[in-house]
Image: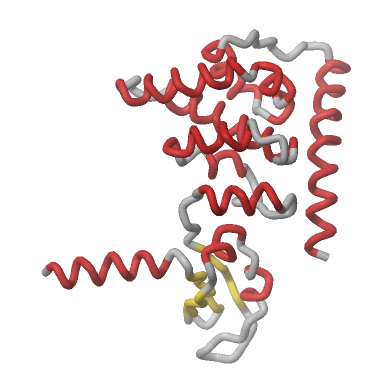
Length: 216
């Protein structure tokens, strides 16, 4: 029984560093990848173009990765490489899954060598943590996490305000008052809204343009 349990644990651990490629014929290939490759999907494009081990075709229907947990090593690699993403969309949600990383995120936010764009994503992730826990049952653990994050972000108020265009409005509406930062509801003036959207898109487009250059 113990041996079977250990086997399952080893299998799960191994799967964290595999990507599953499903073929149109129904076959599923498991491709071994490194921790870093799995975290940032560095081989995804290559794996899509691999031949199926059963039919020999390249008719992949999906490529799924079991991403490893985000730790200091991966966070350092992420901050060192602007084009690296933990998730193609809503990256802050991936980062927000790890409440044990609060101190680590704060450490990177305070690090002068970390690009401003990466700091904004980390701040956004911390605001998401506040939002998620304020909407729950408010357990003692949730309250402790919310209080810790809000206290740390209040100390870095200027950085949070600088990152506000990156944060979804419904997240700010809940998290900012808890942090102790004044929340301004979006103006009903279409020109004001358009200007805010354009500023946000311009800032994020600059990063995406850099990322696209990497994938060419």
